[in-house]
Image (spheres, rainbow, N blue to C red):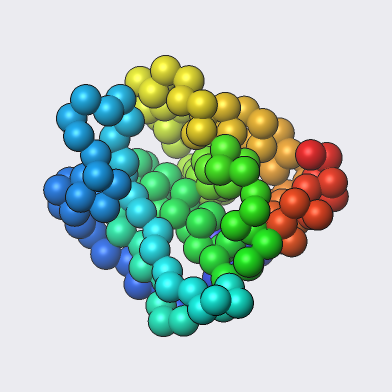
Amino acid sequence: MAQIGLNVPLPVVIDLVPTDYLSAAFAVDSSQEIMHLGLTRFEQTTDGRVFGPIQIAVLHGLPSTMFRRTLAHEYGHALLAGAPAATQIPLHVVEGFAEALAETYLVELGGNDAVGRWQRSRLGRGGHPTYDQGFQLISPIVRSHGARHVAAALRRGPGGLSAIGL
């Protein structure tokens, strides 16, 4: 992410975890249509400052492109950690940014082939309102303004949305 100008200014711990860890974290049952591949957690003080490391958990055993995509998505959440105003951003915008960041990273990493594999992996979601519709909204904005500018706008909260055309 450093090559596209994005650095999390806090310590980050990355763990590879089994499916049951993520299922328990999301209280997922087998009837839900979305499979969680990663999770970002952090603790905040009442004024929104993060204390301790940001913890990113990624499902163990993912194919390389999916691992990188998932890690980039979770990194998007880590970028917004500690910005109290960012908690006021609608969830589909936050998840759309994380998905767009994953796309941006895959383009930097491997060009169209990696992005194509990632896009094909998304087809099974069937237009999830939070992830896919958020991605459709935010991806063109990230492409036109850049991921660093969009992250900075989201960290400013609802007041920053006008800077990116929302």
